[in-house]
Length: 317
Length: 248
Ligand SMILES: Nc1ncnc2c1ncn2[C@@H]1O[C@H](COP(=O)(O)OP(=O)(O)OP(=O)(O)O)[C@@H](O)[C@H]1O
Ligand SMILES: [Mg+2]
Image (cartoon, protein in one colour):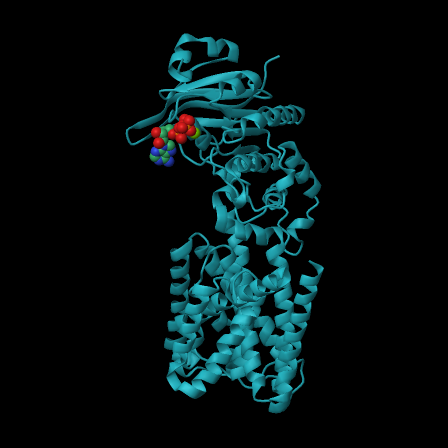
């Protein structure tokens, strides 16, 4: 047991060091690593909902809420500070999560998934159609913000963004893991296995799901701010259903039993997209599709599950 | 000294299509008693527990708990009022271990839904372990509930209900599926514990030995009505009950 957890600690440390060091050696990787980590943060939220057996096909709405916070700030208030974006974006996504959540937590499974989709499509069309406010399909530019009041050159900024994102990702992973082990986190899993019994314990399953939903919305908002800042733009695509699908895809790819799966899935997804789209133009989706089929067929617990299984086999021999 | 009426059902009626499960049921549960409900298969005994806990709404009639009408309330509220239920088919969190099932119940009961403390570190842990001792399943504390045989799962289900520290415990065939060699030993301890904690209990039962041994009073549920109720020795000696319910 001790050997197992120290192995996990070392692997985690190695991953964190790799994420922090590789971009120094290969500067072109910095933005890619930010995207991997930022999307991983969003996927943590998907994983929370999956504990309760619920799949949201509309989580991109919270991602977009974070991204457009930065966009609106840039357009209407001028260049802001990344920390302020993060705080305001998270608050905004949290409030949106609470409002939408109050409604969707009454539903389960396909209805839950589709209702989320519907809400996200409303947001998407608002962002598209309210051209005078949002610049429509062109999206909103996100000028490079200051960080803690300090302005940075583009070269330095990408590293500042990287290390800030890495820090947030570590904290978020830790917090989510703790949450999942808490009584509330366990009740979330109990919704999946026996909602009737949960109610017979005097617990409101809706309230538990709402707590999980709001946390996952907040994570979506954080990821949205970071991606918009890294890509210097927020577009309606951020709220589109394919983006929501991407997050669910990454969660299943990485494995939903563990917070680390979010980042494993996100890394594989972005790397395949990055390299395969360079080589194969538009057929990178094909490669990802094949990868996902292979995962579902041969490693239903995702990449993290595969890794654990291999370790278990090694420990036995 | 007249005993307090804990649960009071009046004129309950419910039918499912052509099946009449209750048709004017009046039944009182007195504080401190152990009431057995017997009756043929499909008579409506489980339906009564469903109504008493708010899972089903009766088409007519009312249920009061401590004088307060609870007929329109949900299971969650009724649980909070002090009625816990153990199910005919165990209702557990199958992906969780046995001790986790109890800890979740304890957290539900205390309302301790803190976000940052581990479920395993709850202060109720040792109390939950003694509950497992009570129903003789401490040895499977760390096994997944879904891996256990039916008999053990029934005992976990009872322990989960006890974790809620109810005032009234409703049990639906508590030891069906439990090996008959263990049945009485477990019931002896369970009943003693219920008495000590002054928990009133209702148990639906098919096994007449259990009824004779543990019930203070037995009610016969048949054809949508309570046909007769009284001390087990008296009721079980009734020729009609012997013929129609016990089948001898
Ligand atoms: N929700 C429901 N919908 C339709 N029919 C139901 C429902 N609940 C119970 N019934 C029917 O009502 C009748 C009474 O069922 P109930 O489960 O209460 O019987 P029981 O006395 O508990 O029987 P057993 O001793 O076999 O457990 C049965 O015929 C059953 O099929
Ligand atoms: Mg029954």
